[in-house]
Image (cartoon, rainbow, N blue to C red; front, side, top):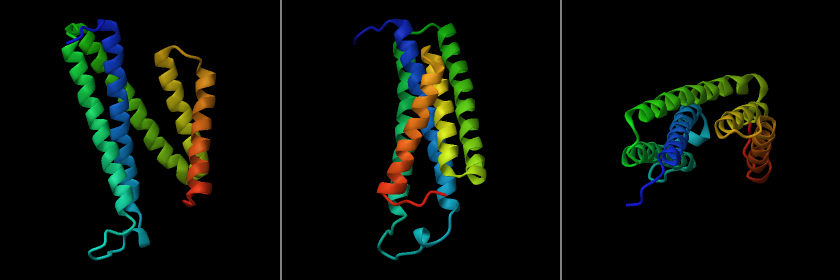
Length: 167
């Protein structure tokens, strides 16, 4: 087994915990939106699964990946032999970051109904990028611009290339 520097292991554990919590939270929010929708996407197709199977598979994969990241983050923290004080710091940072990300996702869902998907996605993406940049001590304005660009690319991909009607 390779021994890791506790500071590097701590940072890696926090990243995994935050990414895992974000993935699980995002999967839960998207599942709530997906299963709340009515229409042809959720019609009964008998023995054929129908078009709703792909989003359900993707939601399950996102949730499983998030859980795997959470487990990996806890495992790295234990294996690295972090002191109990450092583990408490990771736990409190994880709790704060999780609440911020979860609150941001809920706010984005409400913002979407008022402003549309594009603006809500750009706002949420910029704020998430700023949150991550703050932890990495990077430039906050640059992170916000990168977040908006990521949201714009994803919006263009789904709206114009895949033809998904985003409202």
